[in-house]
Amino acid sequence: MINTVYRLVAPRRFEVAFEDIELFGDEAIVRPTNLSICNADMRYYLGTRDAKVLAEKLPMALIHEGIGEVVFDPTETFKAGDLVVMVPNSPSEEDECIAENYLRSSKFCGSSMDGFLQEFVPISPKRLVRLPDDIDRNVAAFTEIVSVSVHAIDRFDKIAHKNRDTIAVWGDGNLGYITSLFLKYTFPESKIVVFGTVNEKLADFTFADETHLVNEVPEGFTMDHAFECVGGNGSPIAIEQIIGLIKPEATISILGVSEYPVPINTRMILEKGIRVFGSSRSGVKDFQRTVDMYVKHPEIIDYLGNLVSSVNVVRRTADIKEAFEKDTKKAFGKTIMKWEE
Image (cartoon, rainbow, N blue to C red; front, top):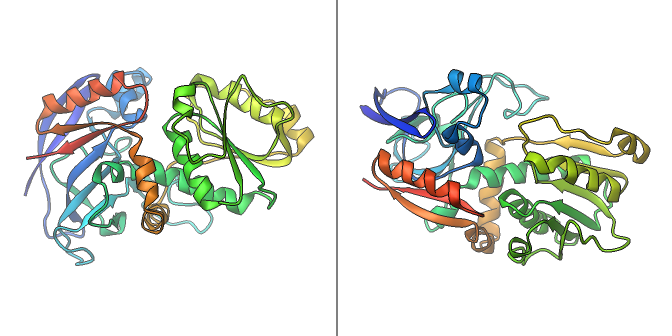
């Protein structure tokens, strides 16, 4: 079976490649239907990654957030037409102490192996999670980033002490929105407070108990635990503010990605006995937990729908490029590519 792969070969330039797919091996064949562009994809597309990294990675098919319909599954775990979310993490070993997304030997779509920007995706059935047929496909397309928040919250639940009256989230972007939303549904008795820099963005956090600008912190405010979802150049400022406001023996979850080392006030971490942990990517269990939350709380899909910035019909490389260019201009949310023949 001939497959069409759309690879980024240089910043802002896609090319088509044709490859043969083995139909009777161990992998299922999935036809992608809805794909979501991530900031990591944009760093490759714009060429903002280190030149050495780009030289090592490209050419490569981008996209690690996506859903599709099963075409064929030799294991008969799924039947043709089943709607599934594809798990981009591909482990080659198991470790009883280290999760699949932290194993250094694991590969990841759109980073260390071709992503989902293909006509068909050969993938192990173990890397697929079934979705409800009636789910909003444009929202389901970015289940991967949602699962990262779910993963971090699950780890937090195992690490943090039980005083959880107030949990604060720094970041008014996509990750902050998703994390605070799922915190509210995971810990409904906790007060979820969100800090950001743009009032217009904070206005969308209608599920949060409180929202504040970072330069307008209420007098005497403190919290039991915090999640940092800022990343980039804002990470040092956010982490410093969190450490200053947080209670002793609190837990800080770091989720924001930064390209450069971030200085941290270790003196205050020591004085307050603070636990700091980082989370990245996710595994099959996190995807399944996320889909279970979709089913249990269908209103979550409505909230996540606020993040859909644009839906772009894609049929050829020119359409892919147009969608990526549109993503460079968005102020907030997710750019979705809807694949049509």
